Length: 253
Image 1: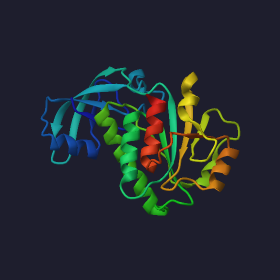
Image 2 (image 1 turned 90 degrees about the vertical axis):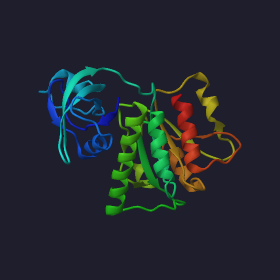
Image 3 (image 1 turned 135 degrees about the horizontal axis):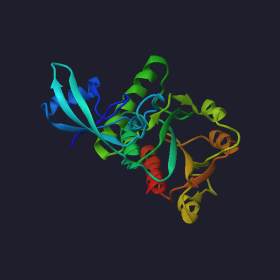
Image 4 (image 1 turned 60 degrees about the vertical axis):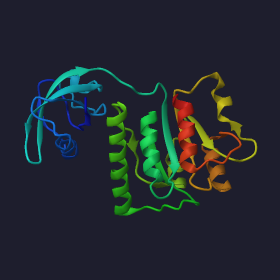
């Protein structure tokens, strides 16, 4: 059954118009009135006056009731409290790789079950974003994450945070960590990630990974001062996006 993200209050019996993107997809699939689809709103926090099932996350059955030239109306059906999220909560902070590699990273990180992604600009970053261009990229990466959730069955769309310089992001972190903080590093003395995972995966992790060329020594020192422990994935030098995804796969498996 086709799945669509609908960032709006959902309640059994309600008649709603699908968002423009979902409506276009329904039309491309040539669905007709009477056809059924699945809707999810990412666990959208609702006003307290709404029905309880509108605040449960999960997903809803829905039936197409009307097809307009550019609009699609559906009736929301039964709610299913199904979740396919990872057991651990992992936030990925990543020095943005160049070209379309960030798109690929966002897509695959969403499929793996990342909770959020913080795009960072670092000393060695090739991709530099600010202002309107940064806002457009964030909106684009959000749409990539939405499409990945629709495909993989996830009901929680990871948040894509606004782009920040690494130093500004580090300064915004609370001084007392409520999460485990790891930094992907090639420096001597970095312990393999699997050794840290030998006694189990932490419930909440913030994982910092650099861009092409990695983080500079000064940046790694700044991260260490904020509670990040350097870890390694092995002797091979992986591409920036491959390294981040390999770490996520180990943490979320």
